[in-house]
Image (tube, rainbow, N blue to C red):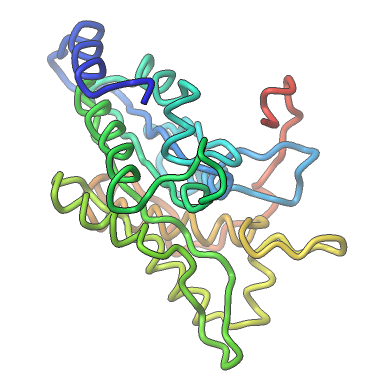
Length: 262
């Protein structure tokens, strides 16, 4: 690992001494993969749920979406992306961590982690890094793919990763948003055909992993509801949970440089 636990703790304590008084606002940082990531005009209508999360939070809670396509808990750290978050995160901020889709790729040693060992080891770096800077870590189990059996039953696709995250959250006393279980139940309620409206199904693509605007909004609503239920955020910090969110609120900016699309 490019960043060990002692380095995280020492850097955090040195760079960010604890400050007295309450902050006017705070930032919720997202560390994750393509299911949460910002998408750009060339990728529309694909939409990460992190793009829709601000619709459910009051203005004083800012969202800094650092999720990137194709990353695992390991490659996100190894590329210095966790270090980038820790260089700007402040006491009172939140670090929401969702990985597993790419941790599962056994043929790719740059991304693969094993659920009960290296996956948990890397997740601990996020937990300890946030805490060292006075921020609060939050773990979110990976949102489920669109997968059904012949009888129309929504099927889990993430193996032991969600269970490993749940166990780690309990062990480390970290708030857990069980988005895997909640999204699986949502896909079951919607059914085989209606879920196509929520995923990136187009005339040229049948994508059962990534979302379009309705799907991103639906998952962001689950995330916001869990942030309130687990008391990570106060009830006043969460808004519009019962409102219809227009898909027109989703926009895809132009990429400023090639690195935005990596």
